[in-house]
Length: 389
Length: 247
Image (cartoon, rainbow over all chains, first blue to last red; front, side, top):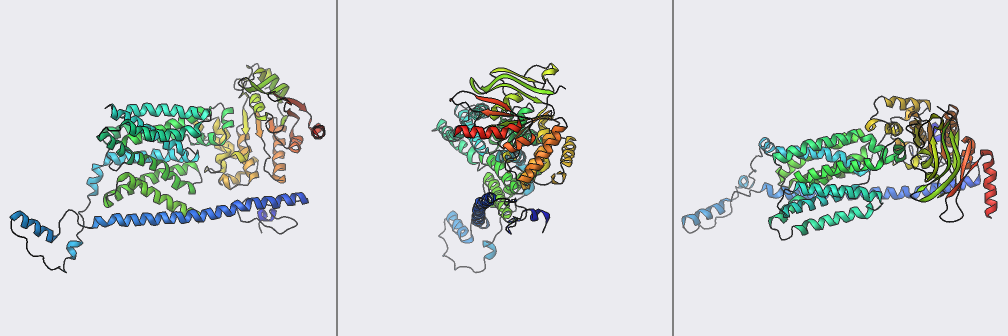
């Protein structure tokens, strides 16, 4: 027995540490009272251990079901793609010819056995090079959003600020709706409202009111954005596009604004990783060193708001949220240090964009949802494998 | 640098106009440890924030390095480096970090944007001194409570503080880990470090502290707690007396 395990033995009873590597629950005992306390402590710890074991298995089952669901969806979506959709079959073509020439249609022919090559006609080859060139601004912006979003998202999850990340896009959408309603460009009002929300969220933390302010902002944004442009024709559809993001196109102007800023924000957030760690773990030590935790928190919120604002402006809310949460959540079960976790999350986000783009074109799926679906599949696999590490 | 690092005279600390703690006289000196003892809610944290200059006194005066001629309540001008060691239980273990990252927290606080560079070597050498350098690459969450506390202590000491503030340093530690930690603290006090320890454990304070600031909550609601300076040898007897008088 190793020295470590030997030290974990109770002198009067042969109890070992329950598992190698787990913190020793049984300490040296010299009195009956301490014996009672130790046994009591052991019981108190073993119950959560069993609960966590059960929860792990339940979560594994849920993840397997989710993966199966994704598989079913993939097959269901793939079916129409293999069927010839644009080309009419032979009998339909004969019928059309007859109608065009004014002659009566020929009698229906007996079913022909030898037509599998027609039925199995392959869809036209996707020219990936041309497709990538056509969508280069969108791909560049999505990759930049992925890098910035995944790095910020890592800290969003670690700082337990997911609700803020969910609420800000809704506020941005209200600004966009105001812009649409007044027939202005959408960015300035969205930026203005995002700044107001940022200040309000920062103050609500100081007033200890963020637990109700942020969810309220989320639902208010969701309702107000559509109320502002209600009965305004095409704008309603545009706003729905902003949220759902079925078609994603990015112009050169949008990419030129968004890509550099997103990359700078990503670099700034990554370089400040020790600050975020310090503020989360030892705010008192930070204060004694002359730092102001509230100001640093506001800086983090400002970086997050910038990513969400530019992401929503260039792409869609779905893609922004997918990039914020999914790469980071996929990486976290395996992460041992923050720099490696940030790098892995950034690489994973670019991979999600690539796979999502491929699936979107081969399966005829909407792009944002393809990227989000890919991210969720990776997340499910990552967490499933992490259970059995 | 003078022997008296921080001096508090007739100060009242609190929030807004609400007084929480009243102190007549209190000193933190080089090579001495001041214990801060009192029940929950008696204002221990408020007192420490006041002594370290994070909270301005409502009344009275706090001088940092009073003989140096620096302005009162200005630790930076007095060139005082105050480090804070939080409880190991206060660390959020879901953050992915190595033991070295955790130890570097205190030093990174004093670096521009938290960048460490070669300062990591200082942290490592302090870990070596405390015989925990082999833990440096291991995930912090995988360490035992005693190891975690020693790692954080190494980090706080590597930032070369003039005054070290420890918040419940022995909370949740077994007897052996507690004793090892107290031995290390005694060693650094002997080398001239000024120290303040907030603790509920009278035994631990009696082993390390030179004098103890005992906070007595006011019997009347809304009145500030009173600080009494007690010698460590008297603390046990005074606790028993307080218990008897309550009965």
